[in-house]
Length: 287
Image: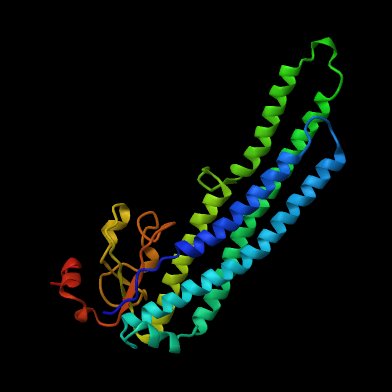
């Protein structure tokens, strides 16, 4: 059973993460330029306009990068399937014949749209958090700009400004809260999101290419995992629910254990289980 190299999408993910980090840094600089010593509505509106422009440019760039990344991962999945099924002997030859079948065309279109929507949700969340923080801070600046009488003091004013600066900074750097209530920096969230989406695209494209070619089973890859994935390494799974045998269906595997967010495992399709290497057969109770 030939297979392609373990997919490594660190570069692709890093490029998208860097785009978000650059945008966040630009937003931070805009917030740092906001004059908090006195209330000026024009300054607030100008800052919010600049931030919107930064995020709009980021959305456009991220959408294109997401499309390229998902298409790349899906192509890799198809190559992986063709090599595993020994239709072609080497990657160079595979690349000459690789193309998206009807199923994969629809899958890739949906996966790209889904990834773009998730990335857009990140920037929308940042925009919402920052706008709320700017309005809150400028309101406090306006209140604290009112005459306070003889009790007002410079140290108190410096303390207020420090607190307001922190509010603005926190709005950017802790802008994402996931379904489990965990708080993420936008760049860290994007890292996990894109990495997960690309590996999912690889897996789905592999299955979509393999099943129409008569491969109803797959073997989960092994790379010495130490987490819950380890129990599934080298295991046979069904790629089609109707396939004979007492093997788990790949879409019913517990996601907390395998193919979870940031998971690096792939599945290699097979047509005939009796042609699997002896060690794989043994590990699955076939001997």
